[in-house]
Image 1 (cartoon, rainbow, N blue to C red):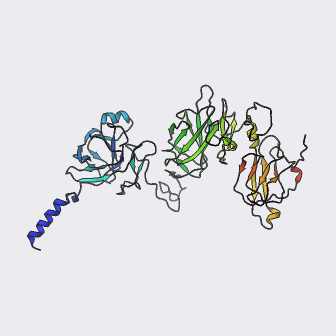
Image 2 (tube, one colour):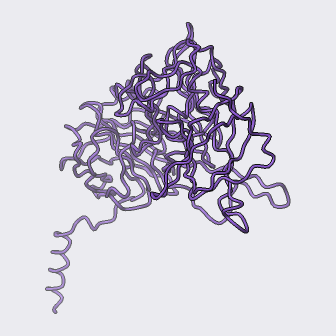
Image 3 (cartoon, rainbow, N blue to C red):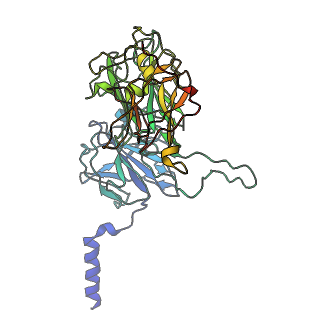
Length: 482
C-alpha cells in the first residue's frame, strides 16, 4: 500500500468516527435524572467521580441532538472537586423554589422536555467531545438514579427509579453497599486498643416478617395525634429511607431514618386518616414489597374474621408482645389503655363493656374488650419434638396461661397434620394464673391450639408431637361443670 493511499484511509477514519477523540475528562458523569418533574422543573445531576478537580467551563448538556449551554447560577466557579455533586436545571429559579435546601452548585440550562420513557442525553466538553453519552431507561414516577458511578452500564442493572422521590444534589438512595468480608470492619484501626466496630446499615434487604407494625392509635385523645409504631426484630440495623406507610385510602407516608435491632420507629400523624371504625395499614419497602399489614375494625380486606379490634379513644392497638407475629391480627393485637409509643408494649385491658364471658361462635358478634385478650393468654410455650430415647414416652408440648385469671379449656382442641385421625380434645382442665401444664393424650399433635370453631390461637412450627405425662399433676385442677 503506497503512502498516498494510507493517508487517504487515515483521513477517512477520522471523518467517519470523530467521537474517538478523547474528552477532557470522563470523570464528570450523570448520576440522577429528574425527567418525572413537570416541564420547567426538570433537572439532571452530575458528579465528579475522579481524584482531581475538573474544570467544566464551556461544557454543554446534550439532549434532543442539541447542545444546551451551562450557566453558573450558584457557586464560586465552573469547577467540580472530587466527589462533588452539581445540578443542571431546566430553570434555576423554579429549581431553587422547589429545592431550597439543596446546597450543590447550580448550572442553568434550557431544553424542551426530558422524555419520561427515556431518550439519548450526554455531556460534551469545551472541545465538543462527549465525556458521556447514553440512552436512559424509563422513570415516570420518581427520579432515575445511577447505582454505581464506576460502572459504564446504562441498563436497569445500574439505573433504578427512586422509591419515593429523589436525592438531588447528594448521594443517591441507590448506591453500592460497603464491601463485606469475613469479619466486621471499623473506620479507624485500633491496634493494641479496644476494637471500635460500627454496625453496618442495610440500604435495602427483604425483611418481610422482621419489621412489624407494632402499635397504633387511630382515635387519639384531645391534644394527641394518630401514630403508627414499627418494631425491628431483625438482627441488623435497617435504613427506612424509601419505605412508605399506606392506609386504606392509598395515601402514602414516606419514611426516612434508621431502625435498630429490637428498636422502635414511630410515624406520628401519618398522611391521610386512620379511620376509627376500621382501616388497614400497610408497610412497604423500597421495592414495593409488602413487609407487614394490619387490618382492624370493620375494614374489609377479604377476611374480616382475623381483623384486630378497633382502638377507640383512649385505647391503642398493640401487639401482645413486641415482635410477636402469628400472621393473624385477631390474635396478635390487643387493646390497651397504656399507650407505649416508642417503647415496650404493655397490655392493660380496660374494663369490658360486657360482663359476658361467652366465647365467640361463627355467628356471634365480636367479643367485647377483654374477651379477646383472655383467649390469647393461653399460648404454646415449649415443645420437645425429638428427645433421646422413646419419642412416644418423652415428647411433650407445654402450654402456658400468661393472663391473670384461670381459663377453662373444656372443648379446646389440639389437632395433628395427619389425615388418618381426629382431633385431640382436652376436657376438665384449668390453667391457674401464671401456671404451666403438660398433657398426655397418645396421639401425634399439630402445631396449633384452638378454641372450638375458632381460627388457630397460636402458631408454632411443629410436626408429629405427643403430649407427655405430667408429674406432678397437681397443676391440673378438676373441672366441675355448673
